[in-house]
Each structure stands twice: as C-alpha cells, then as structure tokens.
Image (cartoon, rainbow, N blue to C red; front, side, top):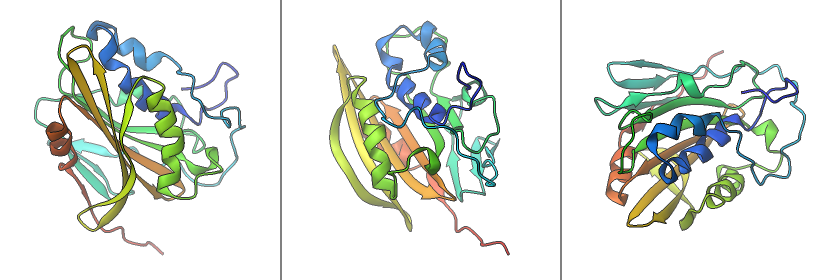
Length: 226
C-alpha cells in the first residue's frame, strides 16, 4: 500500500492487523473493503519519512500442501485444510524494505461471504524497526500494536509477557472484545528478526480455538550464512 504522495507506507502491515480486529463488527460481505481502508493509528511517528536502507525486503514465503514456510525467518505454519488464503490481496504494492509486509492472511471461511459467526483468522506480518525508533525489544512493539487494537474496542486480557514455542522465545499479549452475545478472542505473538518486528496474530471464537491456532506455528533453527 502506498500513500497518496506515492511514498511507501511503513505501517501497512500493522494497519492490516488492526483491520482484522474490525472484521466482526460488520457484515462479512463488506470484509474485503476493510482491508482497503487506511486506518488511522495512534502512533506519533506515523509521518516519519521512509528511511533508506541497503537491507533487502524479506521474502514473503511459500505455501505448499497447506503449509506456509518462511526459511528466511525460520518458521512454518500449518494451515487448516479448507481455510482460505487472502495473503496476496493484502500485500502492499511495493518491495521497498522500509514498508511493512503481510506474509500470510488466512480465514476459516471466505471473508466475502456473509455470515453470523466469527470468521477465525491468522495474520503474519512484518514491520521494519526503522519505522519505530523506540522499539528495541519485542515487548516494545506491543505499545503501538496494543494502542491500535484497543482503539477498535478490544480489551487487554493479558499484558505482554514472555513465552516460548518450543525453544523459540517470543512476547505475547491477549485481547478480547464483546459484541452482543459474541466474544472475539485475539492473541498476538512478536519476535524481532533481521531488523524487523514479526507479528503472529490469531483470532478465534474462544480461547481454546486461539490456542489451537497458535499450536500450528513452529520454528526452525536459522543457519548463519557467510
């Protein structure tokens, strides 16, 4: 996604995550419009100019046999059979490394189909740390992420805390939002890698479902190349 001035939007991936939190307040046949809307984030550095860097944009990864693989960042995600991939539709139209990237967006059901229940989803995205000068640790990234998520009516269930998936250290925070008789649960996990904040966001209709979605994420050991 680019701004009206033609500059890369460094917050494009975070905007997509925030857009996911709005999915359950509107009919599902309008969901795809949500992703096209540039949400206003409560981030003071939103007008920072894109910084020049020799760093290459991260590879977006590949999907084969319902498994998303990203060797560059050292993780895989096992997509539930039958879930719908909408990653390409939510990626910015730029390879600029100063722009955020959406690596994976999958839904339980096609988001353009109208429905009454929560359409569970997984979003994996990256943001360059150069866009967030104050972010030095994974926990720091939750300041803009939490502010953006709570601005959409979510409440913090668990403040950021350290956790592990296998041997991989991550920072996690949990959220929920009540809409009538329906409660939406969201958990986000974050790591820093190769100059980027990498976020894994899971949305479901129960805490158990969110945990099941998280359990499909796994990490491998990155090999240092000469």
